[in-house]
Image 1 (tube, rainbow, N blue to C red):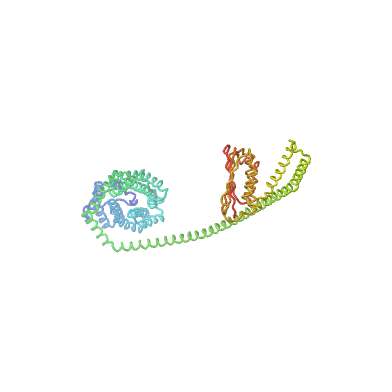
Image 2 (cartoon, one colour; image 1 turned 45 degrees about the vertical axis):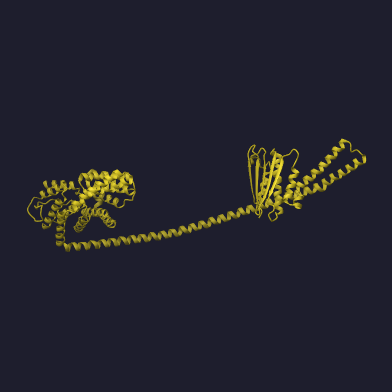
Length: 579
């Protein structure tokens, strides 16, 4: 009972009870702690020496005592004790920064645990190896040992192993967003059982997660907490690591004074570790042990190492084959999906293009029908205008001319020209004849065919000029360009100007009308502007005949724009292509 109590105290101090085999019990043996010579001493004294040396940070004396214990139990052929203390030795190497020596010792223990089918110890050694390889920057081996844990069941049925496995998994897959929750659960578990080393590792992994994602503020908080715990336990390698991480966090956050203090702390712990690990006495002691160790068990070690490497290669080959097969299947699936996706996209593109073509054809057909309707309407209007003009000119015009001639003859024969009533009647007949001629010209402008568009517009505007009517200003540009205007286009332009000017005179209540025609090789621009009362084109477009103008402009494939507001006048802008 006394020995067990000492052993429990020893394991709690080191944080090593997770690695102790549950089947190990203390034997009553006696060894000497200051040499490799076997003597009959109290083993409890040796354990006290190891515990005291570690408490005083005398790692040289602690390693000396552990090596003495290993040598003694080898002579006693107590392999359980030998590998227990070898495991302790690997932890001491880790504390002083000799990680590669810790890995070598752990691999030696790992082979033994596998040979003895000590499943729980195998899992613990695999966790330790995964952690150590990750620390030295060898992720392939770290993944290998953690993957080997998945093949066993011990870490599933043992609560401590299960939490340690979760932590190692999070350490190797830091990029996962779910890692902080898993790490925090392990940290809370470690606090509940009072395991300091598992707490430090949990804080280390959590800090590395935040640091990787550039969350330096939270990383600094976690590393500071880990450093305080490592200081209290005098784990110099952890203190060195956390001091440097705190320096990087402070520097990246712009806290340069704090980063300098953290850098000085890192240098201090680094110097302490160098003094310990480079101690001539310690190196001589370790070298002497390793030489004797490998000489006595060289054959078994080489055999076990080759067996381990062979199994590793087989496992790697199986893993790589599986990964290659999965990759090939995924790649093939990707290409199949890509092929069908491209096929569907091609079909959709063809379908959309077909719909667009059909829609365009329908629009073109509708436009053609609309143009044909407009052309028929305009042609009908012009034919009717021509017929009415011809009737007015030939029938009513001729009749009025005959009436005038007879009236003039009657006045001349009766010599009644001095009478006022006959004079008024004569003027009315003249006015009627003039009105018939004007209406006939409006309906069928003969000047358009005889003199051309420009002269026909001048004649039109001259006929609109009245003594009490608005002043009409006419400007034209570009008619010196070569090329003739199609008679149909000219007629529609004439009608548009006629309608716009007529509307301005009748409805705008304006004092001035400005008409401008600008011609280029490819386009005719018509501007009609007045200073009248303006109007809302949306509400009065039909009443002012604007729909008729729009139809003619659309028929000519032109553009028609209106700018008007109350008491600000109106601007009509028409652009008609000539080619």
